[in-house]
Image (cartoon, rainbow, N blue to C red):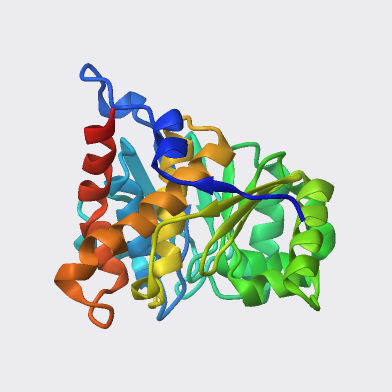
Length: 284
């Protein structure tokens, strides 16, 4: 197995673009978050909120009808589009032009949702981050992987990765299979874990931030929002993934002395993003 490149502060500073003092919301990127189903609208709330808090100029959430009020009340800064179905997403149509799209958090796997994901992937040309149930839908329909644009980012946790690439016998086998998968479909794979690795073809990056406090519900939804925000702000997909996992982990390292492991929740990742960014500014 290749030696990984460690994602430390130096690797981040090389990639980090400070915000231009003359910027405005129209040039800070517009991201679309396609997420949520009945009982899991929180995933859309977390992903869209973290997307905004990572510096995106505009964020729109695309949710089932039942998520409309929840989104508008939870995140007043996020715009909301609704599907025609009440409880799950059945037909993805929008007339905005985002710079990046995330799909999957809390989506569910209804038959109509699966068809909607297929129809969306068939025509979509916008940079994409795929997570959670959208990955599970792809695992059930592996031939749809061929529809993905080059350098689409996928963010599987170990179980989702296993569904995509099959079981592995050793750590080395897991990496070999993931590298082959990344090469076959030209994808950036964020292998979530402790530590998280990013596979971009034959190159492996290993994150150095984060701790056990991140093992909490919604943590992945927040990561998806962070990475999508960076893509919308015109970071290259692999750089967005590298910076996203670093910042996500860094929030838990900064917060730990104040929260302890047990009481740190996914919303705290969002709360501490500002401090994580400030620590990069200090190094410039």
